[in-house]
Length: 490
Ligand code: ABU
Image 1 (cartoon, helix red, strand yellow):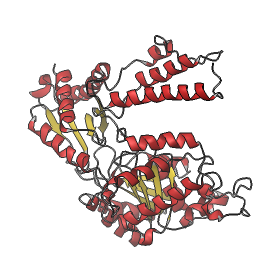
Image 2 (tube, protein in one colour):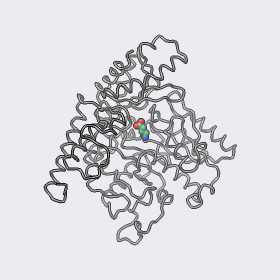
Image 3 (cartoon, helix red, strand yellow):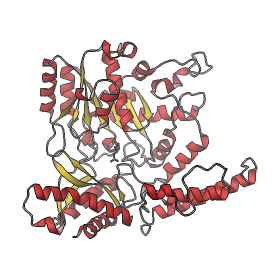
Image 4 (spheres, protein in one colour):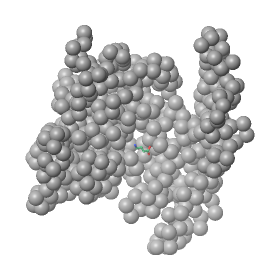
């Protein structure tokens, strides 16, 4: 029967789902299983044996629903597999997973204390702790968990504009002069997107030059600020990246902060990827100066291994998110409730409904953070990149290094035998550009491992290997290298 209102069938169904999920978890950590069972979109759309994606006209039996659950996982990608190196967010943390299950069971909304009292308080306390770790006095300030780093970055641009030109909230961009934003040529595309979405225009997001490690050159920032002012534009906002997406570079925050103070500009630090290093005594110096930022993006769903999604926007000035975004909808945010309505944090957000992203993170924090709040269990994967670095340097006959890693990103070209003796020039570049996509395609067909590739600037396609999964060991890294060599050998 499909009637889940009867106790026993409901419990039986849920137990069977739990069995499917626990089997999946077991297989995810089993290195003899594949990372993925790749099918092209048309194959999945045509339907696999017993698994049809089309929505049916009639309700399906519970047996079929269980098959659907099993097959959905079967044809997906095991992002928690220790040989999945494709994304900055990966891994399958069991405490975090339990947190996500509990969150879905509670099925509530973050907009008011009224319907999410415990989660709202957890969010407040965790954000305060994060601000303390950033180094803002007493952990004062503001913040929110948002649906990802791109949205957190967008919040930073919105509050910067509100700080200097609050009238834009009512009158629109015509109330402001031509405003310009600055960010590195290696920064995440979300800064440019924020410029476009918020009405600044992509042209008014000025890209800064970087050095050979992918870090912003501060002198270029200053000269571009002066140039913009001479043209009559108004510099507003600078983004410094702590852990760039491809190279994992850390911009020199203190030098950038000096320039922002000199010209009275908003300083944002996009620590979506590198923010996790604030929890490491050994590595937090890479974000030195972050306490001088006006706002910070920090994604626990990346380096800290929290299940997707979990991204925080943290702001030094208290109340500015509320000022910038509040619309005071009377049906949700009644001022005359029986409790302290400052805990109704929903009007700070640009969303109305907001998912509970805090619980899994709060639970993992409880499980993993030492007594001084700055020793999160993640040192192993931070150290692993050097193992990888040494390993591929050792095999330098077939790789060429691009970045000098500051984070766990290692970028390299695989040079197949046919290109090894070829002189550098256009022909070699064109051929090399095709190598990484070809190997990646074969890798996905085999399903043994996954790693990302991209071009960057004048560099043709290269592999970007990242370690953020806490389950990865040196043997997995060796496996990836051997697999690239096996598939790429022509
Ligand atoms: N938000 C950027 C993530 C990109 C990546 O995983 O490569």
